[in-house]
Amino acid sequence: MSDIWTALEQNRTAGESRRIFDMMSPERVERFSACLDDMFLDISKTSIDDEALDLLLQLVRERDVEGWRDAMFRGEKINTTEDRAVLHTALRNLSGDPVHVDGQDVMPEVLDTLAHMEDFSNGIRSGTIAASDGQPFTDVVNIGIGGSDLGPVMTTLALAPYHDGPRTHYVSNIDGADIHDNLAPLDPQRTLVIIASKSFTTIETMINAGVAVDWLKAALGDNFGAHLVAVSSAIDKTAAFGVPKDRVFGFADWVGGRYSIWGPVGLPLMLAVGPENFREFLLGGQDMDRHFRETPPERNMPVLLALTGIWHINICNYCTRAIQPYDQHLRRLPSYLQQLDMESNGKGVDRDGNSLTRASGPVVWGQVGSNGQHAFFQLLHQGSQIVPCEFLIAAEGHEPELQEQHALLVANCIAQSKALMRGRPADETPDPQRAFPGNRPSVTLAYRKLTPRTLGRIVALYEHRVFVEGIIWNINSFDQFGVELGKILAMEMLPLVQGKERTDKKDASTVALLKALKP
Image 1: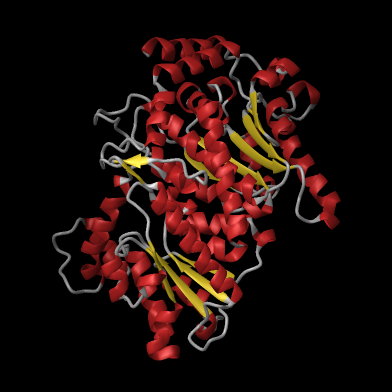
Image 2: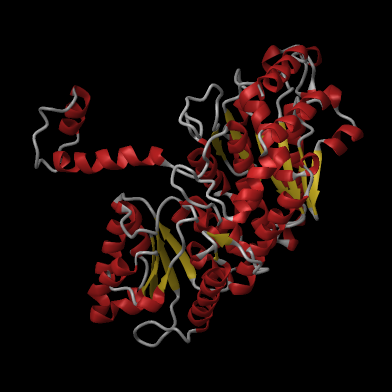
């Protein structure tokens, strides 16, 4: 293994002066790209050359990425720290082919839950499942945080052209302004509230849920339960909260929060776009699963995308990546991928508890194009730090009457990736302030149109990219113990903020902050 890393580093050193633009050719694009139907991934605008790609593919074989992949799909407990299987892929397994965990096929329960979601969704959308006064619901408020919020928010916005159900609203922040501002314009008599928390103990979600229930009770009295739904596996806790048993949608512990949009956490999306479009979304994820499992690594989209990440982080020492969707409907994708990537691979020890000797988990951020061009692209083009960019662009928009605007959007996307690659050499301008160094890497994912199926493929592509990178780094991408300590300390801090305990045993900074923030 060390020999491959050394060879990659030597390749990078030997090619320090090579320019991406000079390597470009039709043959290069053919090798440094991959397709799934109308989806095209282009990694040719990176400094990876043929030798480096061969070495990276050796890394895939050395780390047994394909073996780990197959173990994941078989339901083996590859989440070793929590002794759990990792089977969000089963939620989009519409073929119904058996998937076993501890010797039991989980697919019957998965498909039963999907059917329950569809029946409920059809009922809400048609009005046969009505509010307490017998009239249809017009609004849905989803209360969750993390994966119970980012996934539904991102996908609901992404599929806005397909909305034909109730209006959806999302509450996540414990800041009271979030729940207040979302509920203020709504009529409780017309509102369905979804509380999404697997354990039904997540502090931010339960505090906001309590506010929402009080809001419903004030208007509806004892009939408030007809306006509640829970996405949770804690049946006893949901019952105590007043949620009817047939309004509870559970999921197993082998579905991680940030991977849960494919199941009951996706209920608000299904309510917005309908069961048929939700199934198309699942089919897109299933398409990418099949591609990931059946396509050789050198033509495999998740593998190639992961290898560009490994090259940039570990060989080029670029510690960040910018996500630039040139699609207004994907404006929350950077935030979604931020959690998916950083919560999964933001680790400092390997599977055996040993400190990592190489970096993992880049800082992921971004903004919808072309807005980002007028915000941070200055740094991307001329800054002293190199930030690999990942562009997403559709050939067609959803607004046929605005084709000229979409053409301009596509032109901007392609132009930005070319400008990053080519730059403007100093000999082309007498003013050094107007020179662009170029030779800055980017990846582009192009597709025909952002349909539910295409969205499913995009989300699954990035899920599998994170998985491959994690296997190469020998880390567990499916636990998130790093989120726990701050939560614990917050509960310890609350009585101090409320003035119920003395602060004399706390550090000087904490004491000073408590004093400054005293009501």
